Amino acid sequence: MSEDLVGAMSRLEEEKTLALVREKLAAGVTPMEIVEECRKGIELVGAKYGEGVFYLSDLIMSEEIFRRVMEILEPLFPPSDSPEGVKIIMGTIEGDIHDLGKQIVVYLLRSSGFKVYDLGVDVSPEKFIEAIKETGASIIGICVLLTYCIGTVKKVVDLLEETGLREKVTVVIGGYPVNAQIKEYTGVDYYSNDALQGLEIFKRISREKGHNCNGES
Ligand code: B12
Image 1 (cartoon, rainbow, N blue to C red):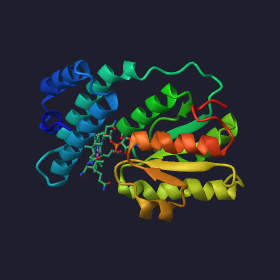
Image 2: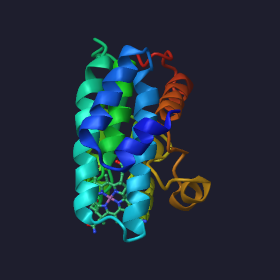
Image 3: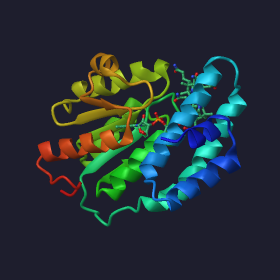
């Protein structure tokens, strides 16, 4: 991992960040390694915001730079032509609008042959359940970054129990704060704060549900 890209991102140096991304791609660095460096950089922005050194406007700036990085990288995650792929419902939990990480997971899943129904951000527990009923999917991926929204993730699991769907549906959570304790508290099945590891989890779930591992039914 190079300090230059992490540092440029963390200092909100837009042009330098984009130039380094292009340079690294040309040098053969993988898109996911580049994403990981930018993620580390933006995490430092978050830390400076937490310390009161950076302001909300800086968080917004970091979003803008990250989006521009993803504009360069997105074509490298081509969606696979698999309309019959294993279905996954994805969304950021109600109250939370962070979605940069979720988008990366969605790109990875789609390019691995999964059929992703992306419900967007600020998604209520009821909407997740409706989507399960409408699409017949049996896997939910939830993104959560705000700690005060973790209780709402638990509501998704509670609602699955109440509607008799819990046995059938596997729930995976992801995002910067998730850990084993949050998994236990919310009652979800899996957690990951790494997109590639998340992809492996979704593949494993698909295999357990009797589908082949590249996301096809
Ligand atoms: C960028 C950013 C924003 C942007 C979001 C833009 C967007 N469209 O996403 C904006 C400016 C809008 C924003 C707003 C706010 N933010 Co903000 N934000 C961040 C920041 C700096 C980076 C988040 C990010 O995108 N990281 C990069 C991505 C790639 O990483 P990631 O999300 O972790 O995703 C990776 C993995 O987790 C995984 N993954 C992600 N989702 C999923 C899902 C599944 C299913 C799986 C398997 C894996 C997975 O894959 C990704 C790639 O590996 C974080 C700092 C941090 N440490 O995270 C603060 C942070 C999350 N924000 C914070 C806060 C407080 C806010 C605000 C409340 C600020 C305010 N006063 O208004 C608002 C809340 C708005 C809302 N209602 O949601 C706090 C949260 C603190 C807390 N304990 O809850 C943080 C931690 C900053 C801090 N240190 O204080 N923010």
